[in-house]
Image 1: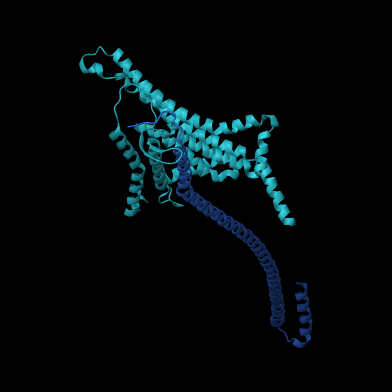
Image 2: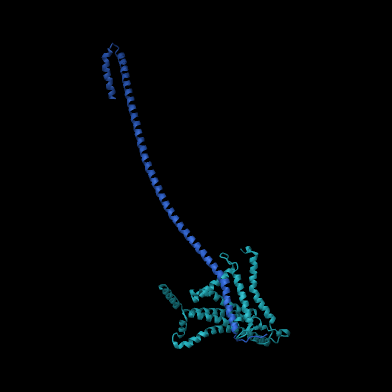
Length: 299
Length: 167
């Protein structure tokens, strides 16, 4: 089958692979070109590329925006590559992967939210992909957009909007009444917990990723100091090489960058699913729908 | 180059990231989930079709098998009846032939017996006349005198007849 592929098919394939890889390469180049070597520990937020004046607050186009757009382009390229030449009978690896992704997210959504929310599975896939890839690009030495509170905050607010939408699906009165549950006295606490949901989600994700990178920076600096203390007696240039920095940060980076990044993406997706499906009073909604239908029938 | 503080909230950035997520949701839905779902559905349809075809083929095969079983059974019984018929006919025919043969044989035997009886009678009569002639000639020679043949013939005849009877 592979030898029968036409040339145009291959060219499109290469273009799609380029679409996946090129954004990352561009980001690395920008980073290398604008990098300011700094000594010591320097923990700071995203670098600001330029500023657009807008009402209320100026829009700052920073590393996190550029990086997330590039990640989105990469993911789009990946999707196009996986589904390029998709066929009922052709069973190649990339189609397996595409089907695996779709089926896994479908099962995840079905298992956590129920059959009614099956339309959510691309959304959950988007959260998982964007969050995981945003965290993982720090493996290339790039700034993770997920360690910017604004990026994760935007996602959390979207989740909050969805929660509120599903909570008020039975009408505003049911939504307001749900705060007085189980006792009207608890209404302030309920409102606080409602508002706390997106904030806690955003801070959990952002804090985990940021703390990972902070620990990485601290560890690198610490190992440099330790190296010069322990191995400083070596003659000549050997004494200046921080030998302890070889290997150890990489091992820890597997935990802080890869594992923590994927785990946080999964937790964020999981919480989104649970909150949204928990907010929807399904029985009440279907009861009302049925009542409406019977009323319409009797009229 | 300027950097943001570690925690700095910017409404427009939040809005942009919100829109980013929605955009990526739409992209993934259009470019990954839609084609994959389509293919999965097509495959499911194909599988369903194949199963249906297989089921109908199986059912028709079962029906055919039943039909042929019945046909074979009826053919067997037909063959049995044909064989038994033929055997019966053959039996009858055999008996006929045997009895016919017996009759013919009996006829032949009777004929032969009759023929033999007639032959015997004939031979007896011939022998009688011969004996009569011989004995007359003998008596003529023995007695050597004129004898009236006619006188003695009666006596000899009766003697010879008695002789034949005594045999």
